[in-house]
Image (cartoon, rainbow, N blue to C red; front, side, top):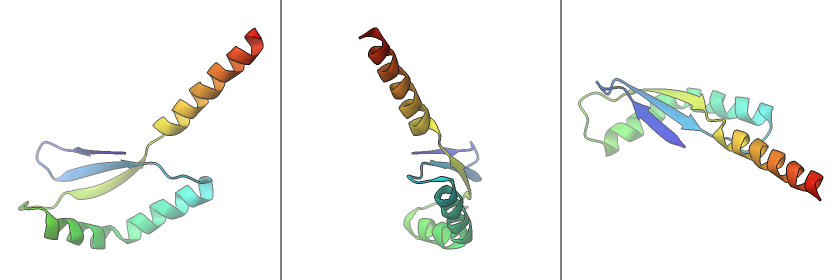
Length: 81
């Protein structure tokens, strides 16, 4: 959902959302961690940087939070009827 780079481009924090249950989220992050070297080499072949940033993956909860707020609003509308 987003990537945040440090000023010196040494680290890239990659935010992502996984559609699925907690186990699927965990498995996705494990797979991304195992593929980190491959992903970094693929990025290196496509980007012109002297140093490829170290990739760090972080779960983005914004979609879940937005869904929670949406459900709360819907519940309030139901109560008003």
